[in-house]
Length: 401
Image (cartoon, rainbow, N blue to C red; front, side, top):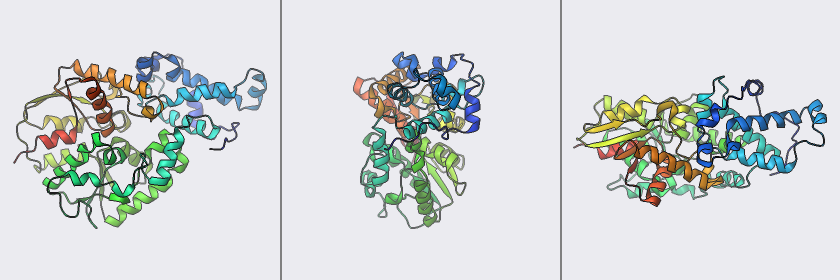
């Protein structure tokens, strides 16, 4: 990617530039950062990032640029700084805890875009752009195979849940569509919807990535084509509502797509079906704890529906994590971190599972395929005796006759 003019702060809004100056250096953000606690590297903290960003911004202003001459920002310094910028899960815990209300998560997204425009970013980021442009999914898989997971459903209908018209579109998302550890989630949700008599359809190969990975990679310039395509695909179905099991898909539609369709996360939609007595339950004796996904919890403020859904199942006991709801610790799977620093992502997952084990629960339930994938990978590799599942899988297990 060609390097652009660094003397340009256009990637930041005026509000963001003002917010940066409001930082009081209290360091509370560092105390709650999962990357800092897992790596013991203070350079990954929000306060360090703001200090570095301040220096970059000032170096682009004429007067400060003259003052910094001779000891300004070298390419080596910018390269090192960019590496700390991308070693972040974008969990938003720093934003949640910030006493002066700086919108830090949005700031990190703008900062990543600035680093890309400046030419200082991990080159693995190019893979995200190339995969999405060429294959329309983050894994560079054949997009015609996006709904192949339906083949693993016993007695699936002939149409494979891909109809010409339907009231509801289930937007699967890239991870659940292609990654084996996560494919049980769409299988479970499709069967629950079918059992409940919901008129729904998949988009199949007409579903493109929601575009969220582009923001996390600092590639927001490429986003609009995905919006336009997905909206057009849903219009063709004549649908009124779009349901997501992926919190990142849900959040990006909520925040960046036009308000054309009703949208809901699977936990919200399924709770509505339960209240309408459309999902029959059997008794399921199981003690679980609930992990709030960062994008669904802190990002979209959806905390109660998943808990109400869990507590609606007879026999299931819910015990809360010490850090829950707004304070829930990240699983390590966000912000493209696994691609940039796999070891750090794994260490964050380890800390998360240790917290889960401390509750005494038999299973940890979440509402995110990426959280399932990250935590389940750690559990399997380390033979940890605890079950990891998505809330759709829990509901599916509890289905009665």
